[in-house]
Image (cartoon, rainbow, N blue to C red):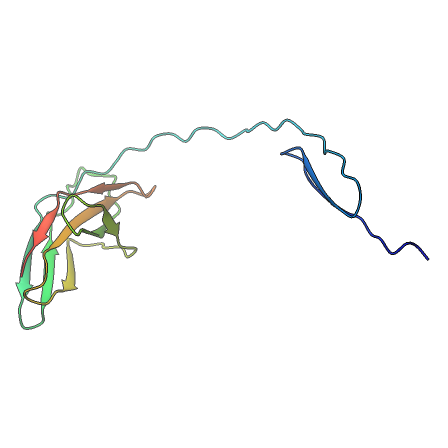
Length: 139
């Protein structure tokens, strides 16, 4: 029978460290690592959506934001995503995860509530986003 002591050695080779439980540690040998990754090419951004406007349906308390259709010469835009900014128009925007394939976006808004600040983002196939001007929605 042995002494009942077991040694566990875990080495992080790239960092050149060794962790030993129950025995003396010897530093691990560091190996030089070279990246073969290339710098990704910059992708062109889609044109920002233009012509933002909104309508309000008081009966359904629904705001519908619309924008100009995609220019036929625009080969970059694949879809759109709505962004809700705030609490002021200068604050960052939360970009929603859902995709819009058309030129309108609707959401619920009760009358008399604080203004909503909306941006519509054009998205490319590489997920590059270009935001519109901020639209202030008051009802």
